[in-house]
Image (cartoon, rainbow, N blue to C red; front, side, top):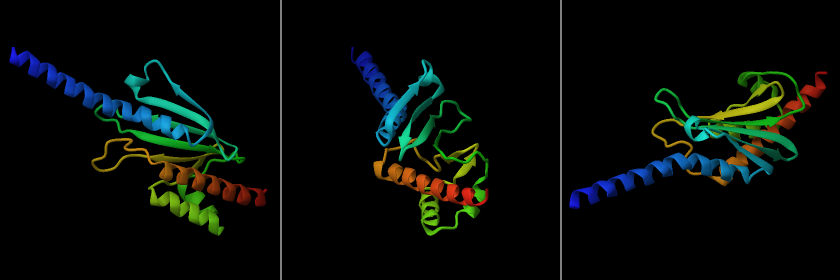
Length: 170
């Protein structure tokens, strides 16, 4: 009689631990959505299995799209992509974006992103940063409103700086 009770207790503990790890990503995206105006969260029927979910909305009147990809397979890593719409239609790698930002507010914004190990690129008008876990880290980890608000603010500043440079080269 004691053995089935221990087995049930172990199964219950495993289910609680697994659900906390699995739903951590879902909570992260819900909390990130609160930083945006008019947020829309998109989760497919199979997002639990694929680990992919999205949120879109606006930040400082710019379109924002966020993709959260949770690790679901052995050789896959989780990642978070944040994209902010610019008025530019070009594509630039990270080094090109960094080299074009010359104003002090833009440089400070780049430093703020680099402090979070985020390096912006421009892809057909979308300023993007990608965040991946490093070391022993349960992705996406605990949500920090201050950190992600700072990232959005820095991305907005970089977008403004890039647009100013882009408009002078036309």
